[in-house]
Image 1 (cartoon, one colour):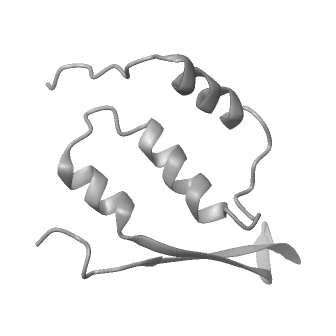
Image 2 (cartoon, rainbow, N blue to C red):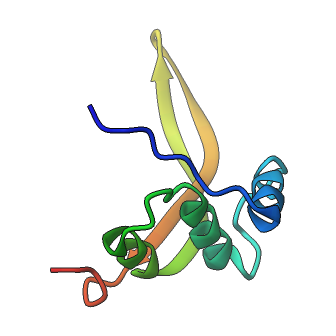
Amino acid sequence: LSETIRPEMDESTRWQLTKLLTLNHFTEEDGLATLKQTLNLYAFSGTAETKAVIDALTKLEFEPTTGRISQKGKVGFAHGIKIILTVSDQILPK
């Protein structure tokens, strides 16, 4: 078993955690920055590898989509959002 890692809680961290409690779908202009900020909040260990993976996220896109669903013999359609996250393999550690 590994030890529990707890985040450092300062004023900015508290504010960032409060922002997470709001409905935020990352769809605004700064969606990628918001996603990276959220991931950094949960990267308690702060390792270089974790930072590199977060930094490797280069683009966040959304597309409306519709899919066919089947449940207990009944067929229907569901509307949703397709999320496309681009990761740069040049930034990732080897």
